[in-house]
Image (cartoon, rainbow, N blue to C red; front, top):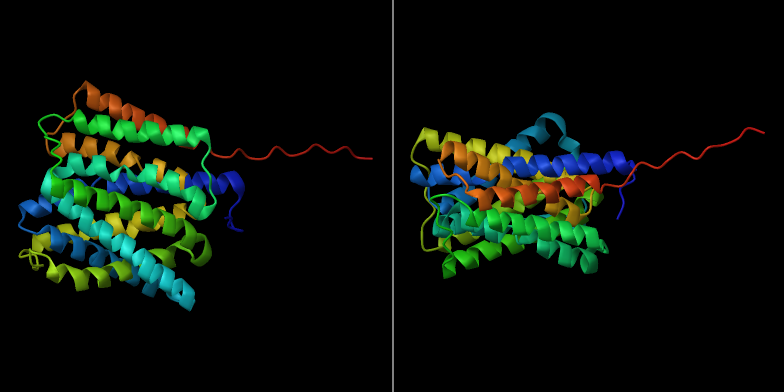
Length: 312
């Protein structure tokens, strides 16, 4: 799968940088969720209003700068609105309910089984068969995530039945939207992909969430709305656009492993803002994640060497 606008290594470097940048923004998700839960906002409300507010920012950007870019074929609309919407919507629910049930560390551990799923499925679904080196880097990164979770100070990584279920659903849906994004972004563009997948997710959540045991209620304070707005802007409008744009340039497995930079940022923020540090095992785990992500960068395709020519 190729994009005619990509210039080999420069495109790959751009995609790698965008995937890592998106992961850095997503690393703040656990902090945002914890603070919102403490402010009385339910997980269901966060799952709905986070992408809804992110969508408003995206539509505002479209209205100001890219109005014509939202045009898409009927087939594209089906793939993005239904397939992408389902993947993003189910991820929002699974992630928030998992954080509420078992906390951020256990959720991150379960969520980052997603790169393994992407590596396993990108070959048969996309024709992007990963090299042995890329499989090894994926294993290294996933192992590092789990070590960092088990090495967290004063945080119990509880894996209850409900938490495992929601965490695994978040991992599966995350892997799904990586694969859908890799299929869709080179065909219809990253902006169209993020707008329609987010819109589909909002519609799905609006239909399903009222049937969950805990009702969806509006946040009660201006400060909660402000935090939700910032959450949606950074981790939906900006981060998802960056990640879908990355998928125009790099393979799904490479993007998924590069995104494991998220728990590195999450651990640093938890140490600074929540006083949840890491013991040596945790820091060793983060070092493995960094090694896996850096290895993906170092294995990017090299620029072709110009052939020398002799004048006659």
